[in-house]
Length: 159
Image (tube, rainbow, N blue to C red; front, side, top):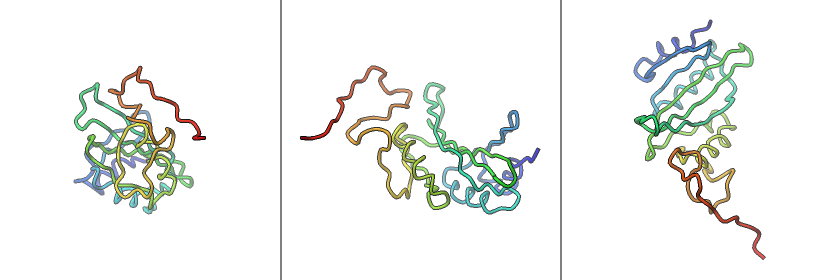
């Protein structure tokens, strides 16, 4: 057991809000404003060596009455050390989360998907636009308050 989450908490005591390890899935919830700094540190620190951003997604906690409403979830992996760490940041509808595209270019696509599906903005993103849905689509369909039966016209080629 690496206890990466506890090491991270010791390194950033004011910026790691909570940690847990459930069945070996180490998780740290960090301050939204500090995600870039902490992500850069876990990438460069020899103990962590988290050189791969496996995934980035979000969770809408509105039905659970979360304050703030969303969690942005980052999954990191170390190829050399074969360990993982999950970081989470909390954000409200009006908040923006600092982009990680400068550290992991793949974050470009992941952040665009989260914007498209949840409407979470990423501050400093070089090209934040829809990636799965067409540009005229209104709303963000993975939000819990998105109308299930909402119909959108399909946008076809213009002749």
